[in-house]
Length: 473
Image 1 (cartoon, rainbow, N blue to C red):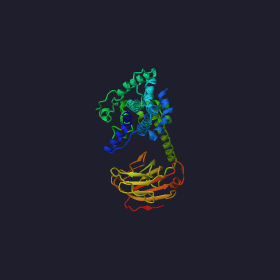
Image 2 (tube, helix red, strand yellow; image 1 turned 30 degrees about the vertical axis):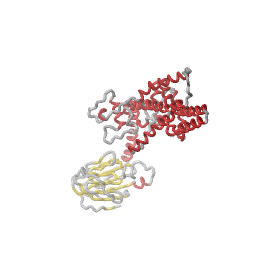
Image 3 (cartoon, rainbow, N blue to C red; image 1 turned 60 degrees about the vertical axis):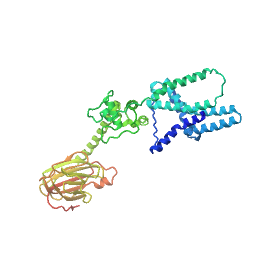
Image 4 (cartoon, helix red, strand yellow; image 1 turned 120 degrees about the horizontal axis):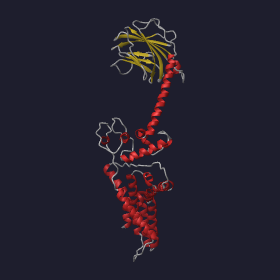
């Protein structure tokens, strides 16, 4: 009966999972690993890392599947066979060997965390995970010790009279009993609180009910859990972690990042078990926030210097001297990420018109002008006239003219970023022609690193009817 009880207790968790998966149709197993950087010596962790962690391959051996049930069955067969042949001593040796092997595999899950809890303090205790993970490991470790203890009871030698145990046996019994009394109630304690979006006031409506946390703590929890924003995304694998444990792990990662100058891209930070919290860390960690602000300022300074260099190159080009006086002349450096700069009028968006000779296209309320080889900038001059200007082709590689219908008279020309050229039409709504002159296309399309300001555009806008495009060059 004791052998049967040992086998049944060992296989019970697996049977429970199998039955539950059949009834629910869900056979998913969620595994959770929790490790934090340890600042001091933790004997239990050291033993686990050096010795016990390498023994996981043993669990894959068939004898140890189903928490050791095949081993228990094999030991029971050997025990029965030895007793039938009158070799009671051999039977006890077989049973004790089975029990010792099972205890060697299960006791470290109890003893190593307990050792760190007793000798290493809170830092070493946290290294085994949040309280619910720590106590669950202790509880399951003690549970796994029950089958080998039942096996030992099954093979014990009968005693006719009470025999006083030695000091080692008495001490071991007292320690195990005390451990079970202290740890089992804690193992059954409820996990820490996981606050809702409303409790944390993640939407910012001021209806939060959770107290005891700073605003930075609340915003960190909201960010990690994806609360508050319509398209916010949560950080995976932190949903069921309590508020306090999540904040503790964030602070551990903050301390690690602070030691590296607030750089969340440092190798030690990226390799930390809590590295997935790094994107939300600036909310909780002043050192990271300062480092990111400094990095953003540096990048912005580099971008400003880059743009200024391109603008100086465009300004260095000689100004265009038109053959007749325009109503106005505007110059700017315009940027694009998708080949063209565009002209729009208020209320007229949508797809840009098709390009004529891959240079420009016009429609009702919309213009498109090629400006760069996918990504880049162009030095643009726009001239507005009251009448048709003389044709200029000398010095330009391409010249195309198209019709344009202005529904509002509010055309503005702009790239993906930077300034917009406005007030380009001289007579308000109506029909216009747009003539575009280009040079520098081959320089930017056939050169890996073209010079600054390589593309120059001269755009002439003037009243006129007729929508048929004309290619002059």
